[in-house]
Length: 363
Image (cartoon, rainbow, N blue to C red; front, side, top):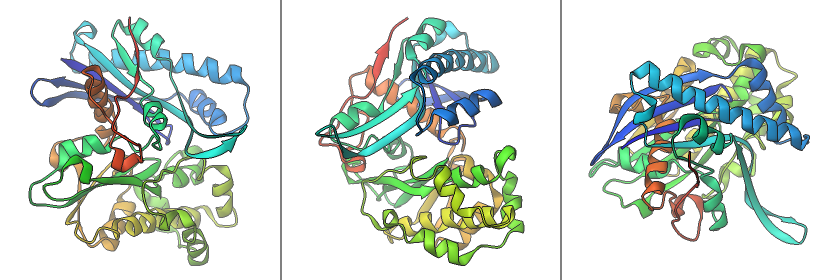
C-alpha cells in the first residue's frame, strides 16, 4: 500500500510531501517540498489566531486543498511514481488556531482546533482517498490535540537498551521521551516552547536565519532572556502544547527595542534554553535525536550541543530525512486510521483513551 503524507507547519514555509510504501514495515519512497507562494503565505498568516472574515478562511481552505493536491502530483512526478499508484493520502492541513486547553465559552468548557486545506478537494483532484483533521478526535476524547507525532517517534526510535528523546524543531519545538525498552504508554511528549517561529518572524522578509548567521553576529540580551524564561509554561508538567497563539506578533514585539542580530540571537537562546529545560526533566536520557527545519540552523545546533548533556544526533543519521519526519508521520497516522487503529498517545496528549484519528474524504 502506497500512502502520501502532507505536512505544512507553523513556520508556514511550504508543503512537505512524503510517499511511503507499507508492507510489514514502511519504506520511504520519496520526499519533496513545494514552497508556499509569498501571497499565499501572507494570507495564511493573516488568518492565523486573529479576527478575520469567514470568507477568507473558507476561500483559503479550498485554495490550500488545490495546492496540496498539486504538491502530491508534483511529488509523484519527481520520484517517478504514477499518481494512480497511490492508495491513500494523509493531510495534516494548515493550523490557523489551536487551543488545546479548555476555556469557558458560552457556558461550556471548550477546547478547539482548526486546520484548513479542504480534503474533499485533495481527494477529487488526485482520485485518492484522503484522511485529514487528525487533531479533532483527540480533543473530543479529552486530549489537547497535540502532539500527534509521538506514536511515530516510538515506532522509529524505540531501542531496547538506549533511552532516547526525539526533538523536532519546527515553528514550535517538541520532544518525545522514549525510555529504553518502553511500551507506548510509557512515553511522554510535549511542546517545549518556540522553535524557529520567533526567529523567523524577527528575520522579516528574509523569512529565516540562514545557517544562524544573523544570530551568530548578535549579542544575547540576558535581561530580556531571563524575563521570557519566567513564563510559567516552561515549568508546567506535561501534557501541554504551544503554538502561534503564544508566540505571535505580541510576543515578537517584545524584541522590538533590540537590533535585529541581537533580537535573533536572544530568540535563538530562548529556543535552546526552553528545550534544555524540558530535556532536563529526563536525566536518564542518553541521546537526543533532532529533526525539523531547525537542523539547518548551524548556530542553533551548536548551541544545543554545548548546552545539552546528552549526545545530539539528527534523524538523518537514522535513515529519516530531517525535513521529512512530520510528513512521514501523517502518512503513518493515515495508514493506521485507514486500518481502524488508534493514532494518538493518550499519555502525551492527555486524552482519556487512545482513539482512531481523522476524517475521510473519498474521490
